[in-house]
Length: 208
Image (cartoon, rainbow, N blue to C red; front, side, top):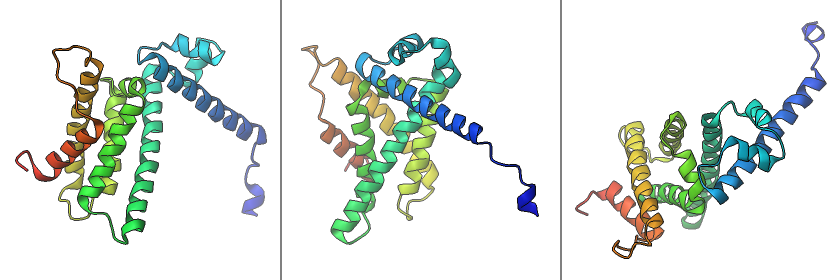
């Protein structure tokens, strides 16, 4: 009786919702590629042109640049999550044990650094000071919390502090690479060295 009284599924509405989500994903992919190629100052109009549509259409899917920033941040976070799961699973499978705290933290930091290094323009776009940046860092902190060993005290506080520290360190490291053409500046350290330093500083302190 109850099943008969339920409203039928509107097939057209479901298809429209699916089409809208697909179109939004396509626009996000175009924006990501354009920002990767041209840098974080890409305009919504340029994204529309690259998508073969109008700016008004783009605004139907992303109400403003801040919403686009948040959407890209969520996409990056999803990729980082998959990489972390794969790496920690491989560590556990290869060694037959649960990864040590330092191994977990190294995997998380390496995923973050490699994300920034792989596409500096997109990284700069996502981490510009804004509500989008706050949302991204809070989401990264929640992700880090889920991967921390059980023995870490106050994992939410630790994760928030660690993410802030890593984000500012990586930001400075990226700036050093961008300005490394100046002969008077010391050559920036490698990404591997950066990861090593961050793990040491977070795990053992400055005097380790």
